[in-house]
Image (cartoon, rainbow, N blue to C red):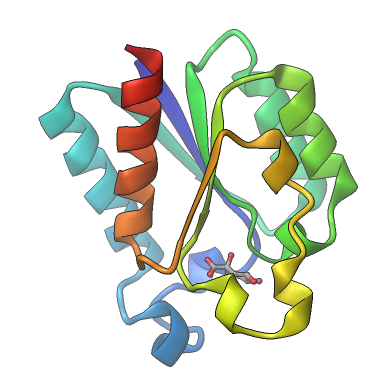
Length: 143
Ligand code: DQA
């Protein structure tokens, strides 16, 4: 199993941005956490972060034929981007939507997710462990 972990805008600022919401762990720590989990659980993983909508669309398209599934935190693009939702639908790869915070318990605009309809599951409010839970979901689905 080969998974792509995609993170959207401002997630490179993990550990700095709003630590009361997103915690004090950095993006580099998140990548290490995911890579260690992959090594322990016998799957391959690549991590990619971008602040740009088109770069995320390009990466989703590149995943076609190269990955078995996607773990995806589109960050603010969750609530705005039809292009990202369309890209996930276009490639047809099983994708789990992840949010570090519980978007249901925050501002009303965060309750809208364009990408959700294209995803097999949503994991939110579990902090960084949500990414590992998403890997478990894909592992169960793909075996
Ligand atoms: C987020 C939630 C989004 O509403 C926000 O724009 C983010 C991060 C999360 O992981 O909790 O940037 O996706």
